[in-house]
Length: 393
Image (cartoon, rainbow, N blue to C red; front, top):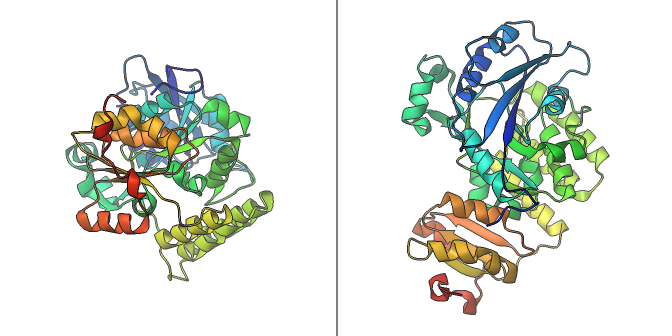
């Protein structure tokens, strides 16, 4: 698939890392970013924005042993301090074509940046999002984290990204979700710098925890950018995070600001998420609430049940044909693609396909899951033909 938007090469990425009294976690984060493997011709640097730290954050960044260029910006601590201001400072100072956002307490495997770059080659107007899995503090303190992650990262995860479960129900094509913008979490996301500057970056009136990244995602969505969720572009949070009363209060304040700024019903529908971030409620999981949000926004958009889909099951025998014909099929009709290979290239192509039709995409469902999928999403009787029969078309 030819890159869209008039550019065929990605030359430089800038990783923007906001930090506040983050010395301990930041050292491990920078160590992981210092060991990234990119495709030939690609390059990257790191911009650390110190938001008024009083610990050894600056000393960690200024360690002379880093191989990758690291630019250190220190901001004085004021009432306007916060992640939005810090990230905006980093975005403005960055020189890369693509801004990759991570937090100071995360660990990026060696192929992390290459996965973000791979997706941006496919489409110029893209928001790339990767999962963030949580490790335990004991794992981080073990002293051999890099070796442990290289051996078997999944074995060290104590909590997986909850967006995986949402996509498992609704389709692994994030761009097909009516609420794709809500799932932009700045702990692991990338966007071309020009798009971030064009929409004005993060809204610095968001303070504390929550929703400043989803609100930016909303503006990027309204600008027309597509969204892709890339399982291979994973980061690991060094400690499992629990939402407390303070964070819940900040989330409520930020949602009130979000709704006032964008008085559309789809934005106000995010109130259904509140029970999952309220430590006193303990009634609904975030996954349940996110599914309610998605179905509510679909109803607001008139995307009601009843559409039929052309079924394409992908295996070794027809994989190349599906890849070659995907754009044509997506342009013609709604698709339901069942990928028995969980092919990363096909996953990327599905999410970056330019089409007005729905494209549902599910990876390696077991027989029971496949039965559930086919029961929920109606198949057009004449459309369930194997793509392999269309070879040469």
